[in-house]
Amino acid sequence: MSDDVAWVFPAFGHSVNDEGGDFGHPSHRGFQRAIEAEPVLFPDADFSPVAGTFLEPYLAARKLDILQYDTFVLENADAVYATPFIRDQYPDATILLLAAHRMFGLESYDFSDDDFPTSILRPAERYLDSKIVRRLIRKHVDGVLTISEFVSEYVSEFVGDTPRRTVYPYVQPEFASELDALETDVDGCHAVTVCEARDHKGVDMLVRAWPSVRDRFPDATLDVIGDGHPDRYGDVPGISVRGFVEDLADEYRRADLYVHPARADAFGVTVIEAMRAGTPAIVTDTTGSRDVVSEIADELSVEPSENSLSQGICWYFERSVGNRRELAERAKRASTSFTEGEQLDCFGEKYDNLTTVI
Image (cartoon, rainbow, N blue to C red):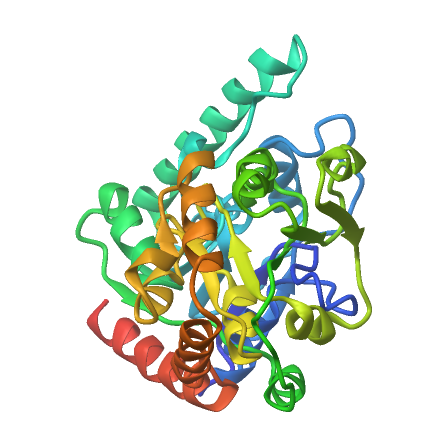
């Protein structure tokens, strides 16, 4: 690969078990290194009082020192705000988008707990963000790399004939080795979910679904792992709010079921991590890893609602231990292709193919 490619990252880390990461998703950093792209970071500055709104990435993009490259790869929606500045300075450059989070519009947000006037202002601001990002993509982006078929299907609604290729994230190698060494048992009713507290992850729906799970399985427990989740979730019988944990592999080992209740999620690497540990997963059908999970059993992919989550979890808890172990073995087999070597090779091929057809 040549050195004339820039990969534009937002100035924050991503993974709940990657505290050392200070930019981008760890798999996406692997993609960037695989094509020998130069990392370009949005400035990590204080943009109060507009932090958390679309004005923050816009102002950060204005401060970005954009050097000349033949190709710019944009990491997610925040980086899209840099497209008019890139195009203005380098009109002949190729601009690619790695499409993942924040491609899904208002349906990925939960506004139900917002107080007035936030209950009015935040939906309006998120609506504007979605419209601006989509308009900038249509106007300036030459090609799109999506990290699941789900994302590819979704973005097709607003990117039109813009060329698209699908690539997949992967479990980090050191962690994969740790997960491979685990021996799990799936004979209980203990579930776990792992994510940071973000609207699109849908943990609030899972929490509201849990009492109906407990109605049928009184001993059922749920651990909510990851930063930022409200302590009040722990007031629901059977639920523990754990925050950040040091030994995530052990949490997967202890779990009988992994639940990914997202309103909309581009992929969900934690799903594959759990499966690699031998823990079956339930996901919503608005999660990019749904196709992998459906290979195990169709019942493990459910609609993003409290009732569907409850029904799916109860369906699994009703299985015999023998059936659960079969599902666990299928889960391990289905997760094996999401390795660094295989997915980086795939990314390189898809990247080369995409840039050739543009």
